[in-house]
Image (cartoon, rainbow, N blue to C red; front, side, top):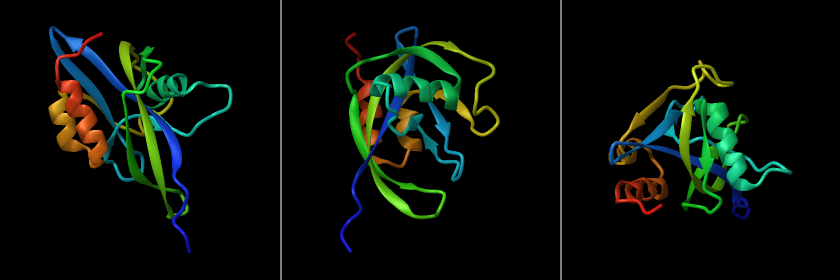
Length: 142
Protein backbone atom coordinates (compact mmCIF):
# COMPACT_ATOMS: atom_id res chain seq x y z
CA UNK A 1 0.00 0.00 0.00
CA UNK A 2 1.37 3.43 -0.96
CA UNK A 3 1.65 6.41 1.33
CA UNK A 4 -1.61 8.37 1.67
CA UNK A 5 -1.73 11.61 -0.32
CA UNK A 6 -0.78 14.76 1.57
CA UNK A 7 -3.92 16.83 2.23
CA UNK A 8 -3.88 20.61 2.58
CA UNK A 9 -5.23 22.69 5.44
CA UNK A 10 -5.12 26.45 5.98
CA UNK A 11 -4.27 27.97 9.35
CA UNK A 12 -4.14 31.31 11.10
CA UNK A 13 -1.25 32.39 13.30
CA UNK A 14 -3.14 34.95 15.42
CA UNK A 15 -0.90 37.65 16.89
CA UNK A 16 -1.07 41.03 18.58
CA UNK A 17 1.45 43.56 19.79
CA UNK A 18 1.62 44.33 23.50
CA UNK A 19 3.90 47.34 23.58
CA UNK A 20 6.80 46.16 21.42
CA UNK A 21 6.29 42.48 22.25
CA UNK A 22 4.53 40.03 19.98
CA UNK A 23 2.00 37.66 21.53
CA UNK A 24 0.37 34.73 19.76
CA UNK A 25 -2.82 32.88 20.56
CA UNK A 26 -3.01 29.11 20.69
CA UNK A 27 -6.17 27.03 21.09
CA UNK A 28 -6.60 23.47 22.27
CA UNK A 29 -7.69 20.80 19.82
CA UNK A 30 -11.09 19.34 20.58
CA UNK A 31 -10.09 15.67 20.80
CA UNK A 32 -6.56 15.50 22.21
CA UNK A 33 -6.50 18.92 23.95
CA UNK A 34 -3.08 19.62 22.41
CA UNK A 35 -2.14 23.28 21.83
CA UNK A 36 -2.53 24.16 18.16
CA UNK A 37 -3.27 27.09 15.86
CA UNK A 38 -6.75 27.49 14.30
CA UNK A 39 -6.92 25.59 11.00
CA UNK A 40 -9.35 23.96 8.63
CA UNK A 41 -9.98 22.26 5.30
CA UNK A 42 -10.21 24.20 2.01
CA UNK A 43 -13.65 25.42 0.96
CA UNK A 44 -14.68 26.58 -2.47
CA UNK A 45 -15.29 30.29 -2.76
CA UNK A 46 -12.83 31.18 0.04
CA UNK A 47 -9.24 32.24 -0.52
CA UNK A 48 -6.79 30.42 1.78
CA UNK A 49 -6.10 33.53 3.93
CA UNK A 50 -9.86 34.19 4.24
CA UNK A 51 -10.42 30.60 5.36
CA UNK A 52 -7.61 30.98 7.92
CA UNK A 53 -9.29 34.11 9.30
CA UNK A 54 -12.65 32.33 9.50
CA UNK A 55 -11.09 29.40 11.40
CA UNK A 56 -9.61 31.89 13.91
CA UNK A 57 -13.10 33.30 14.41
CA UNK A 58 -14.79 29.88 14.76
CA UNK A 59 -12.14 28.26 16.98
CA UNK A 60 -10.91 31.22 19.03
CA UNK A 61 -13.35 34.12 18.64
CA UNK A 62 -10.78 36.32 16.94
CA UNK A 63 -11.42 38.97 14.32
CA UNK A 64 -8.57 40.54 12.41
CA UNK A 65 -6.69 41.11 9.18
CA UNK A 66 -5.07 38.07 7.57
CA UNK A 67 -1.95 38.48 5.48
CA UNK A 68 -2.66 37.34 1.89
CA UNK A 69 0.75 35.62 1.65
CA UNK A 70 1.62 32.47 3.64
CA UNK A 71 3.89 32.97 6.65
CA UNK A 72 5.05 29.36 6.51
CA UNK A 73 4.20 25.69 6.17
CA UNK A 74 4.33 22.62 8.38
CA UNK A 75 3.22 19.01 8.20
CA UNK A 76 1.49 16.80 10.75
CA UNK A 77 -0.74 13.73 10.93
CA UNK A 78 -4.40 14.62 11.40
CA UNK A 79 -6.45 12.06 13.30
CA UNK A 80 -9.86 11.72 11.65
CA UNK A 81 -13.08 10.83 13.47
CA UNK A 82 -12.64 7.28 12.16
CA UNK A 83 -9.35 7.04 14.08
CA UNK A 84 -7.39 6.90 10.83
CA UNK A 85 -4.53 9.37 10.42
CA UNK A 86 -3.93 11.38 7.26
CA UNK A 87 -0.78 13.37 6.52
CA UNK A 88 -1.50 17.10 6.18
CA UNK A 89 0.45 20.07 4.92
CA UNK A 90 -0.64 23.26 6.64
CA UNK A 91 -0.28 26.64 4.93
CA UNK A 92 -0.25 29.25 7.72
CA UNK A 93 -1.17 32.93 7.45
CA UNK A 94 -0.44 35.66 9.98
CA UNK A 95 -3.62 37.17 11.39
CA UNK A 96 -3.29 40.57 13.04
CA UNK A 97 -5.98 40.39 15.72
CA UNK A 98 -8.18 43.47 16.02
CA UNK A 99 -10.94 42.11 18.27
CA UNK A 100 -11.36 39.24 20.71
CA UNK A 101 -14.99 38.15 21.08
CA UNK A 102 -16.55 36.87 24.32
CA UNK A 103 -18.77 34.47 22.42
CA UNK A 104 -17.87 32.40 19.34
CA UNK A 105 -18.95 29.14 17.63
CA UNK A 106 -16.55 26.73 19.38
CA UNK A 107 -16.48 28.43 22.78
CA UNK A 108 -16.74 25.75 25.45
CA UNK A 109 -15.08 23.18 23.17
CA UNK A 110 -11.61 24.71 23.30
CA UNK A 111 -9.36 26.77 25.52
CA UNK A 112 -7.59 29.80 24.10
CA UNK A 113 -4.56 31.58 25.51
CA UNK A 114 -2.27 34.48 24.60
CA UNK A 115 1.44 33.83 25.14
CA UNK A 116 4.85 34.76 23.83
CA UNK A 117 6.01 33.02 20.63
CA UNK A 118 8.69 31.26 22.71
CA UNK A 119 6.12 29.85 25.16
CA UNK A 120 3.92 28.79 22.24
CA UNK A 121 6.86 27.04 20.55
CA UNK A 122 7.39 24.94 23.69
CA UNK A 123 3.72 23.88 23.81
CA UNK A 124 3.11 22.77 20.21
CA UNK A 125 4.26 19.39 18.89
CA UNK A 126 4.75 20.06 15.18
CA UNK A 127 8.38 20.86 14.41
CA UNK A 128 7.58 23.10 11.46
CA UNK A 129 5.14 25.10 13.59
CA UNK A 130 7.79 25.47 16.31
CA UNK A 131 10.22 27.12 13.88
CA UNK A 132 7.44 29.35 12.51
CA UNK A 133 6.56 30.55 16.02
CA UNK A 134 10.23 31.18 16.81
CA UNK A 135 10.42 33.30 13.64
CA UNK A 136 7.63 35.43 15.13
CA UNK A 137 9.78 36.05 18.18
CA UNK A 138 12.22 37.94 15.92
CA UNK A 139 11.57 41.65 15.38
CA UNK A 140 8.85 41.85 12.70
CA UNK A 141 8.87 44.03 9.62
CA UNK A 142 5.39 45.06 8.61
